[in-house]
Image 1 (cartoon, one colour):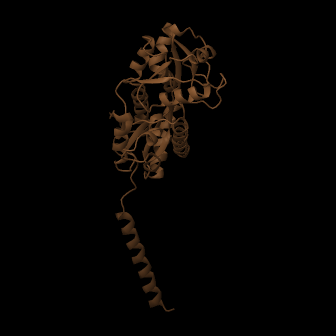
Image 2 (spheres, rainbow, N blue to C red; image 1 turned 45 degrees about the horizontal axis):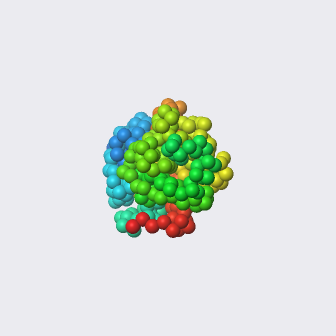
Image 3 (cartoon, helix red, strand yellow; image 1 turned 120 degrees about the vertical axis):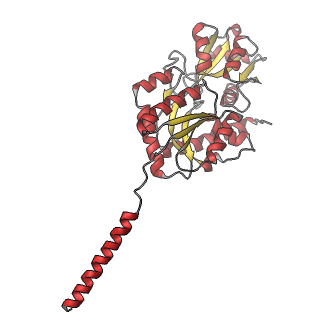
Length: 327
């Protein structure tokens, strides 16, 4: 190779390098998520347990992410209005939803949903475990579960629910089947009304969320016979679990978890998950959660997605085995 050829090749190499440098310089820097506020959609009313938990998480995640996490309440239709909104949003992580156990039930109880829970959503992570308290009217004279079951076998037992197709209804029906008793469901509008119905003896029991029921248990207006989670709750440490009472596997956790569109990029989901779990690890978060009877529960996006799919299958089996209909 002569000197002229060498110079031409050197010049060509420099030109290519300069060209590449120009192209590389022209490429925009990779966007850091999030660059603008994130919306957390709730399918519940302001002041409800999901609303309180969602706002605690939103405030904490805002600090971690460096961008506001804005809460938007879109209540109605057992949370399906909010879920539809998030399912139709851009899969960019800027639209989050706080889902609860009912979202794993409605795929079986409703045929008019505009989304597919398993296909359209992926988990970011669990937020909290919220147990159900099995509370009864004091006039029954049943201070424990054994005496309640004995009384229920005599008949004329009615139970309240905050809506047909709720986790409270399915948990009560599963219990009745296991205990060999029959009871009649009476729907009310919301957990507060369903709790008050037991106090007034319009119905005899309610598998209640801790927030509306625990104050009445502590005042003596209601008797709590059991709790639905695998372990006792710090909010009601003296109340035995269903498992302790011999009902193995009878667990009904009104869980709360964050979800996004299923197509949301992995790195965005990882950022949201890390922020969420940072908030859940704080002692002050556990203290604030305890005020609504909740316990922080952290997991990974993959674990939450698999958990949600398992819950859909679990409640579908309960509905089929009990022959429940919701028309």
